[in-house]
Length: 137
Image 1 (tube, rainbow, N blue to C red):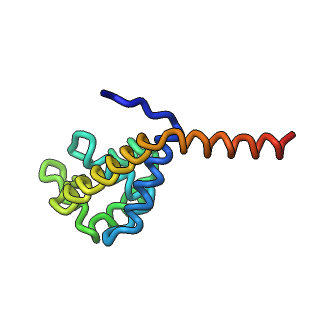
Image 2 (image 1 turned 60 degrees about the vertical axis):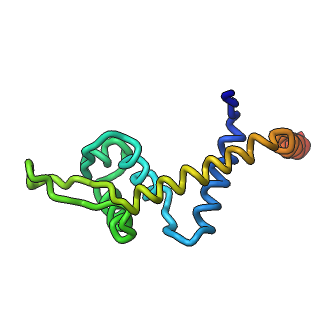
Image 3 (image 1 turned 90 degrees about the vertical axis):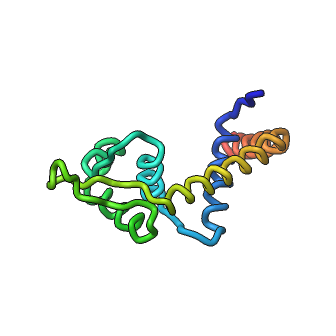
């Protein structure tokens, strides 16, 4: 059975996932680093600095800084393209694959928790909306 998620549930899953990643003993990635990481691991490659910059609509130096950090953590690796030595290819690593597996598990647990308590989440959202309406009115 597929359970539909509403935007509040999706934001809750994202929050729970980010909090779990921050709390765990492991790399703590910025939003940009996580965006680059997920793009490399979830979309077909090969990936280049130029291609990632275009896909994410950020500058090449910003991609380079994110890749520097991902490289320090061994979550991604850069290699000169043997076909075009001016180009750098971004490669996945075993540690990065394990990180993605852990992240999927954390998200799955967050989703299960979110879907088990939809009434509580809806009540909280409704209460917040009521408070804001009283302030505005």
